[in-house]
Length: 218
Image 1 (cartoon, helix red, strand yellow):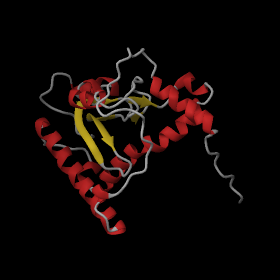
Image 2: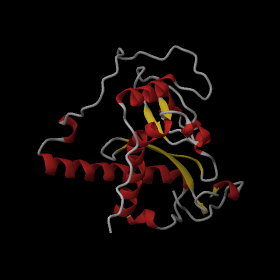
Image 3: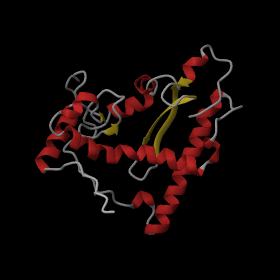
Image 4: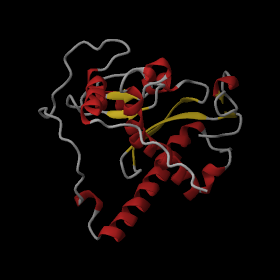
């Protein structure tokens, strides 16, 4: 979330993002396949890495850790792999057999978060310029309000197209073999995820590969 240089804070530089070269806040969010926000929170100053910002989202982490084994969300490679959070492979990991192909299909899901933020920014002009004169404790209220409006607009569009309320529409997805409420009891190994390894093996078994771009015929 882009803001002007904050005032009344101890370390202004902590709010400067080296990646975006702007002042702001680190927002952690989860979206669904229709680009609707399921979770959004201003978690840390903009200069903090995502892994630190996620640690500040204790409510989200508690929910994710309670997911049945085989259920997960997909994130970018700024996060460590867990059974409930599968980051795309980065660095030399991408060179391993099946990892690059798996990245392609994981990215088709992960890109929904980028699309959701892009749609929200284009729809609500307040995010098209640095936020200013908004108290820090009100920023999360602003974010929640706009996320709810964003979701409402998507739901109304889906209803108009399909004629069926969004919450009644079926969503075809694999149903992992696990019982409701089952928790992961195995000790997590740093830098590894059994679920992500199984996903790679499934991609290899099905012979799925990264789609190659169509050559320009002109």
